[in-house]
Amino acid sequence: MTDTAITRCTDWLAGVGLRPTRQRLTLAALLVGDGEDRHVTAEGLFDAASNAGEKVSLATVYNTLRAFCDAGLMREITVDGSKSYFDTNMTDHPHFYWEDTTELTDAPAQELEIRRLPSLPAGAEIASVDVVIRLRRSPKG
Image (cartoon, rainbow, N blue to C red; front, side):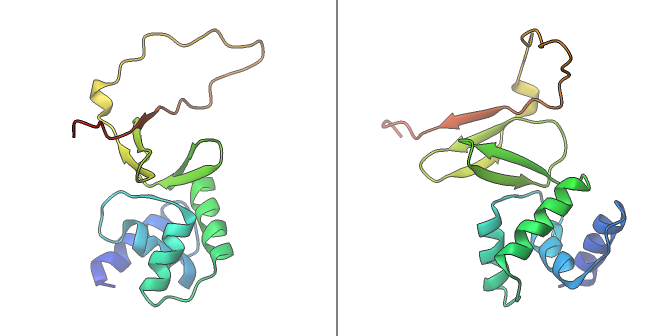
């Protein structure tokens, strides 16, 4: 890991008061070490860590991702009610979900227009609105 990546990861964790443990730094490096945003699954991040020669359990990956979400570093996007992706881009933005590759990508936020939401039940307030646009490749290419 480069000095820039180490600094970026340490600052990312310190900014929300998370202790920079070896496991957190390892996973943070894979998530934000290069300064790019990511959409990852826990299994995908576990595989990336394993391929990088890092020893971290799948349970640790899940726990670390949960800690990152709880600290406000990432957000969880659920697709199909069962598959979770973790997004390092914390701005409000929609997503494309590619059904054939199960890849989640950012959609252009400036092109999304929501004019009105349904009336809320009594005693409720909006926590967030997630927009996931499901795509499949058209037969015409």
